[in-house]
Figure 1 (cartoon, helix red, strand yellow):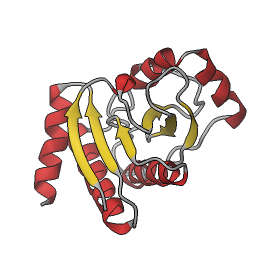
Figure 2 (figure 1 turned 180 degrees about the vertical axis):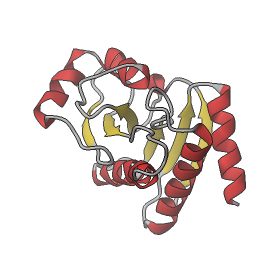
Figure 3 (figure 1 turned 90 degrees about the vertical axis):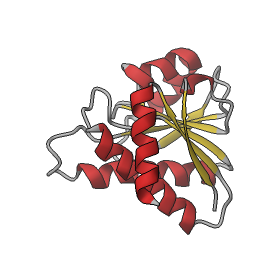
Figure 4 (figure 1 turned 45 degrees about the vertical axis):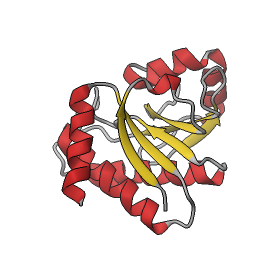
Length: 170
């Protein structure tokens, strides 16, 4: 079992074992959180991602954090919102589960997530928050490892949505 908290801040300055990157399927950088993480980590992050030749939506890949305070970066491409009838919820939940499992396999005990798929991918924030909170909470309950997971919201609206999802779960 572990803990799951919501904070507001900048994930690129998180001093944790692993941060999760809301990557695109190329893993080669982009806008939003993805671009910020690539800029903060330096050019070695891009070079480390090239050999993966991308990553399917719902899976994840791990690289060193390079110039970031985090030891590892876990890259997971979330689903693009297409109305909710194309498996988006299952893919989004898979992003969280896959990332958590990969983190634990690499000895991580502190893991920070951004809000996956809610930026340019257009996933409705309230729905994404509910999926994230349920998936992370269920995963923490099911594993026999003590980890601390945080959702690092970039803004107050995102933080509020995740806190509301936490309250609705209990």
